[in-house]
Image (cartoon, rainbow, N blue to C red; front, side, top):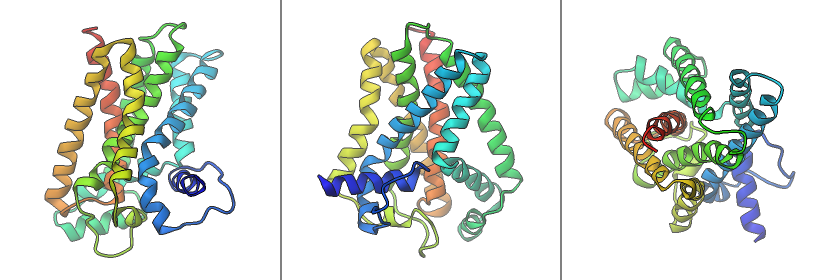
Length: 262
């Protein structure tokens, strides 16, 4: 049990800015195992984002509350996944060979493709999330809460599942995601899918059709992983971050489309 707590806090420390216990270390072995809790981090980030939305919506407009909810999620993760999305936009937008793409993504400076990509991404998430929260009434707080949590957990499951099916692209240790790419066991696979799918099952309790939301998420994941494989023979940490961000937006979009048939 103590070891599992260390693994969980390692995951929390690596993927968020939430303060952790001082005795938690950057143990590569724990970081390998921490992948099992990555979708659970989505529970935490989604919960914080929801409460930021709900509390601010009591005093401010829905649009402002949605912006504050997005800001809360960015602050919680330290823009970890958004940074990966921007790097992927720069790398794949400006590079035409594997070496060039990886070199651009490794550069900490943001380019035109990354800046434009982030602007469009935040606009899309603002619009989609804003329309999604309007679907629920004031007495549907549990469903609204599950909307936030499911979006973050399912998108993280889609991202982390790439390491179970594809090879890490870089040959050196220059990426911050290198430790999680070394190895995994059935515990990591089971844990990731358990924590990734559980919120969706609760969400589907209110309407079974909501379970279909997993389909567009994993279709998106499939084509993104295929695209990464084609150009860089695998994935990097930035690719995982980009996958999470794109799948989160696809979740809100798919929810709105599906809701029209419910």
